[in-house]
Image (cartoon, rainbow, N blue to C red; front, top):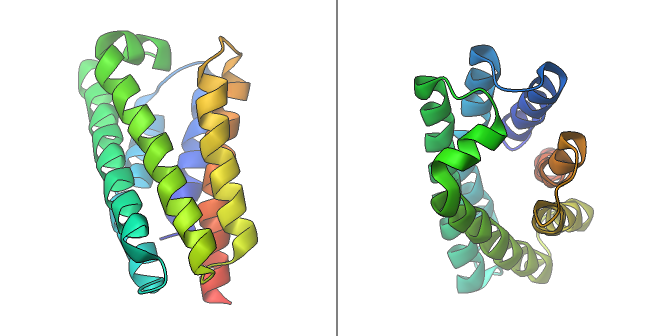
Length: 168
């Protein structure tokens, strides 16, 4: 799942970008990509125990909470026929922004704890961290959609790299 779920999220982002907004098919792919993320993060934590410590556990749990919310937003967009990300953000505003901040802070906690634990492939963990930081930096500027998905793509490639590293 550490490879499949992030790959589905990348596919969903590409579908959203190429069609200029949400579609029912794209939202379904997005939902299938988001749904396993909490389990994936907790599984990555367990694989690094005890070296990752309580900071890694806190990061994994709270990052999972953020993705439970993001999974909900996908269902909300599906149910309410929200046409694009901009409209979704207008509907959810501050709560969405809060969970984005939570994802950033707790992804950082988890990633730094994973680097310190030195159990997972370090290159993949660094990619994950770069993606988390890009998500924050790019969200601060009104940039074209293709640049906005750069952070999530790099973050997802990091997660996929962790999965590949585990298989090796």
